[in-house]
Image (cartoon, rainbow, N blue to C red; front, side, top):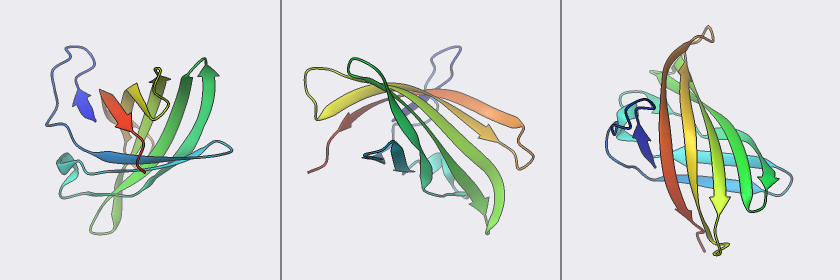
Length: 119
């Protein structure tokens, strides 16, 4: 996954790996290996997915960011996923929002990703 400024398209850090597991019935679990979270710890994300069109899906997930066990932010990722001819891979565009514990947006970014099924 690659984060970027939504207005300028300028990269925010280096690309990083993540995992998403989509379950039948519409749930998703994700994890990310983004070094930008240090010293915060990001929990596993939990969310939902749904079909939005031909080979098109959307997902939304939420994760906690903690420092020394205390909640400092929540992260919400909303993706638009598109499959091509290969059903084992997709690409996506996303918005990423960070909220303080009171629920106020404190930061946001855009992201893009390509994915490949793990077998």
